[in-house]
Length: 403
Image 1 (cartoon, rainbow, N blue to C red):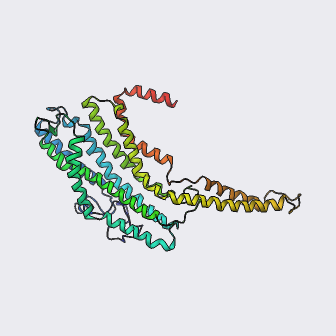
Image 2 (image 1 turned 120 degrees about the vertical axis):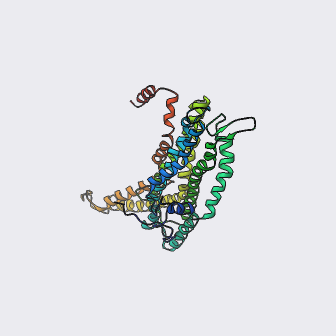
Image 3 (image 1 turned 180 degrees about the vertical axis):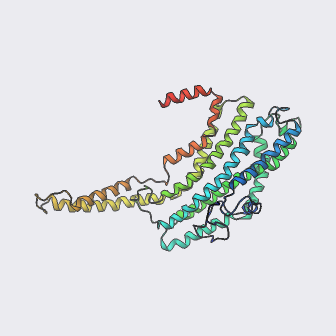
C-alpha cells in the first residue's frame, strides 16, 4: 500500500513553511514527473535511481563491448575503470536518494521557527516572504539553463578534459600527437553521462546556495531566542536536522574522491598517502558547505547568551540577597528548618537555568554532528587503506588501538 504523504508540489502556497521543499521544483523536476520518475513527494526514488544510473552507465558497457575495450585493448578498460563505476553506480544514486532525505526532513525545519515562536509577530510576514523568494529561485528555469551551460562549458571542456581524465589510453579516449581522441563510448561519456551527473551535482550546490540565502534572510530577523533552552542554542537545536539530512550528499562526495584516487593508485602507480591533502580538503569542504550557513545565527546567539547571563545573574543575586536577609541577617528565627522551604528550591532552579545559559554554544550544531559528517565523507575512501596493507594487518592495527 502506497504511504500517505503530504503534497509539496509547486501549486501550494510558496510562502508557507509547511509547503516548502528545497528539492521540489524546476524544469528538471517537472520533466521527471512527466516521465513518471517522480511525484510530488519524491517517492519514486528507486525507479529514478535505476533509470538514471542505467542511462549513464549501460550504454558505456554496450559501446565498449562493441569497440573491444570492455576488458582489454587499452591501458584502462571499462570494467576496470573504478572511477566510472563508482560515479554512476554509487555517487549518482546517493545524490538522488539524498533528495528524498532532504525533502522529508528540511521542510520541517522552517516550520519549527513558527511552532517554537522564535519569529516575532511583526516579522512573520517577512519570514513568509523569505520562503516565497527561495521557492521562486528553486523553480527558476534560467538557473537550470545556466547550470547546463556551466556543465558543458566548464565541467566537460575544462575540468574533465584537463584535470580529471587519465593521461593514458582509456576506454573513452586514446592519446596521439594530435591530442586525445574520443571513442564512441567516450562520446556518450563526455556528452551524456558526465554532463547528466555533473548537472545533478551542480544542482545540489545551487540548492545549498538557496538554503544558505534563506537562512541568511531568517538570521536577519530578530529572533525570540531562549537562553535557558536545554538544547544550549537558544531553541535553535532543530537546525541540526538539516545537517543530518545531508549525510548522503557527504557520502557521494567521498565516493567521487575514492573513485578518482582508486584510478590514480591502480593505473598510475601512486599511493594513498600522496593524496592525504586531497582527502583533507574534501572533508573540510563538506563541513563548510553543511555547517557554515548555520553560523549566520552566531551573532544572535552571542547576544542572547550575554543577555541571559546578565538577566539570570540579576535574578540569582536578588534571590540570594533575599535568602541572606531572611536566614542570616536576623530575619527568621534560627530554629526554623531550612529543609523544604520554597526559597531554596527556587534558588536551585535559577542556578540550573544559569548553568544552561553559561553553557550556550555559539553555533547550532555540535562536534558530534561534525564528526558524523566527517565519517560519512571518509567511509567510501576507507577501503583504499587496503592498498597500503593487507586486511588482516589493518584489522590487527585497529584492534591494537581500540583494545
